[in-house]
Length: 462
View 1 (spheres, helix red, strand yellow):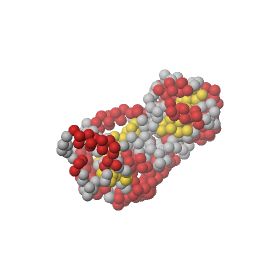
View 2 (spheres, helix red, strand yellow):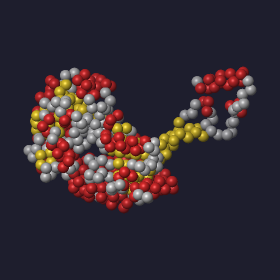
View 3 (tube, one colour):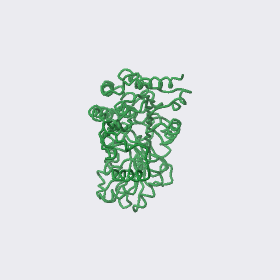
View 4 (cartoon, one colour):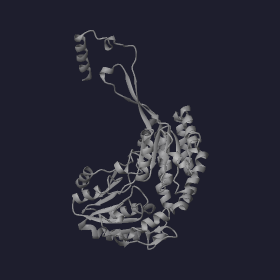
């Protein structure tokens, strides 16, 4: 038996034992998650910096702070989430009681992306444990320091019979997706998402796919440019642009494009200084392959600000591009890096036509003071999430679901939405035996009796 097959067999045995179903077990695991984060914050910061040059600020704000809050939110609401929900029953079923009982799926596979590995490990894991599942975590191979650290720490804090970390090597990589899981959550690229979904189809395993997308930021002619530029630059260059929910490109009304471009340049220089390489808030590109890919996109427009590169550090400075062609390489796929192309539009149809080139994005951002304009654009498009005069603020709100649609993914989680997504909502009907009407069963004596029964059923169904 391969290593991954052994892990899955052990996790299935743990789930069948019933130990993960109790409130006490789930609560303890969530409390241990918080302890894991609190006691190893510096180790996580160091590992993330070692793997990708991630700044301490990005590690704290985008990973540590977020996942701790996610686990604490689950602790606070767990008892309520687990409680069966009573629902009504139609008259023709009387007397009976109906309810919905959240039930764990079983063994989860959590596939983690490299750009926010702690966030994308602990966030889904908190929801999965709250729902009473066991979990196999596959950490990102491109983040070896983080992967080694999480593999070391998980057994120290969590129930090792219920949570395992496995980094497949060699032939074991193919075995990972051949196993029969009860639920798969994968965060990453569209291409790998297709592979995961094909593998899941072999066992009819449900999937949550959190993929990427070319997220547009539409800026109307009435937008407040100072606040708009502040919010775009702050969000776009978090983790050097390696964020699936950030802005990928700007669509700005042609009447204010030059003013916006000037404002974007001003804000980049203000937030990151004359030499962004020295900024405590700026990160590096994950590896040399992605560095070369991103560097190759710098020539696809006129550089307004940025454009500096250093292969020794996989550094590309925060860059804004003007005069970008829709047919250029930088506009073909998700950039996933610190390049911000600016494209202009004349009217709503231009916006719709440009967005249609890229399928349904993970996020749509709109900057305007006109509520009717925003509502019209929302009602004319599809996306995973929408931000009006805001970017990425849906992420830390536990009362909002996170997830894509179409090419950007399927399924939603965060907060109770994560608990629900990782639970089977099991319908339960209980009908007492003190009333047992014989006329509701066969035999049916003749046509008259059949007509009478049909008439009674029609009345009750109303």
